[in-house]
Each structure stands twice: as structure tokens, then as C-alpha cells.
Length: 343
Image (cartoon, rainbow, N blue to C red; front, top):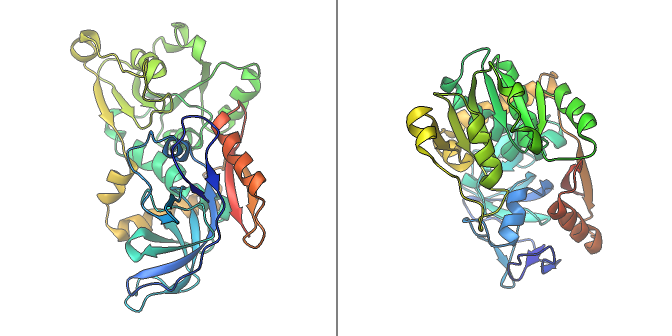
């Protein structure tokens, strides 16, 4: 899959193109994609709203897709950390995972356990690892019995963030968009770690926030939603920004007041997965993947619902693949994350 030019709308100029499968260089690996999610970040790339641009092109068209799991098909002569048949996840943004095969630098591939179920591996990097590292790096801001609050409550990241918070003895307030099926959505989220679920219009209510030490706030949206979340954090708490799903245009500003900084003494931080992974050794990253895989296998981490879209390498259905991207762009309430499943 390639795109010719960024587009601000859902009418992306997407193309399916055939390509030769080259041999890997001495420090490279040839991989066959197994699954690649359609993340909100990918849609920002298609709209030219994300700072990390695609690095790989086919006939002068960029290859999108910044996340995925693959199988190593062949290795370069100087590669000794991976073997044919290994499963890997893509370590860095911009490499282009919406394709059947890719040549990667060995440094862009992180081996994962062979027995990790595919649906978990598909969301490992930008779902499970993201949630764990984001909470772990800010764990000192809250103690057992404290509360965290997060928006984007139905997202894959929020799904795992709530579970990791519970494992640390923290309680969770999850904010979702206003919706007709709020009760059913709230019940589903409570089964996976949320203690309180609020719709956007309920954030202003004081009762759910009373007598609760809300010491961590995780903001995936920014703008108005981020400002509402900031007001909910207790004095001495920490606000963490990790996305801007609300966009970067007018109205997306975060309003910082004297009350928030001086009187409430809040700490404001940003979390970027790429920086967190860069601070870890490859051995530490592999150990984390092994542990997270075990958490899923033994049922301590539950998976969110995912919707697979088949990508047949021999005869791909171009219309179906494009429809999945447009569906992800619309982001209808109650919609599952779309994941390309290669066959």
C-alpha cells in the first residue's frame, strides 16, 4: 500500500502496488508481515499531521504503516541476533508495514516469543508496551489506593493502562465520548480495569471526583478534553500527554493557569514510546516482551476486541483494504481496532 500525497480528509490517495522481493544486505533482514494494525497515528501520517515521516517509498510513493508483527524470511550474512523463522515486531516509526514483505535493518527488528498469540503481538508495541512503560515511568507520582484518570477510554492503550494500574493497586477513572450505549460501554470497560466510567459531559460533575486522590492523568487527545482532564487532577499530581487525537489546529491548545502550576503544583510531562525504548538496552526490551507475552498467556492481561481485515498476498481486495482505513478514520463509537491480517 502506498500514498501519493497527504490528504486532510478520508479520501486518501491510496494505491496497491506490486513490488519485487529483494535479498537482504549484510546487516538486514527480509521479513514477511503477519499483522499490522491501523492506528490513529497512521491516519495522522496520511494527513501529514505527524512529525515522523515515512522513510520507505515505492515508485516515489510513501509506504504507510508504523506498527506490526512479522516473520523473518532470510537474513544478511552479518546478522547473528535473528534467525529465519523468528517473529519480530517493528521497533521504529516510519518503516512502512502496510505491505506483504519488507527489508529492515537488523536494528529495526525486535524478536518476540514465537508462541505469543498473533492478536497480542499485533498490538504489543503501540498498545501493551506503550501502556506499561507510560505508567511505569510515572509510577512514583501515585501510591497504592490513589486514582488515575484517562481520556480515550475505549482505546487499546487505555484498555491495557487500566489493567496495569489495577495491578499496582491504583484505581481508574475512564473518560469516554458522549454516546447512546454508555451503560453497555461502561460495563465492558469495568470488566477490564475501569472503576468509574464518565462521558465527556459528566466530567464537570463534582461527585465522582470528591474525596479521591487523582494523582495521575493520561491525555491522548489534548485540546478541550485535555483541559478538562487537567482540572480533575489533585494537588501535587502529574499530567501526562501521549497523543493529540483531537488534532493540532485551532482549539487544540492546553491552557496552563497559575492555579494549575502554582496553587495545585501539578507536574506536566510528555511520554513518547520511541524515547522510552531508546533508553532501554535490546536485552531489556526483549525481556519486557517475554514478560508481557507471559502476562497475556496466563490470563493476567486480557485482550481488547480486534477486527481483522484479510490481506491476501496473492490477490488482495483493494476495495476492502481501503474501506478498513476509511472505517478507522471515521472512528465510529463502539468500533473495534482494524488490523490487517496477511495471508
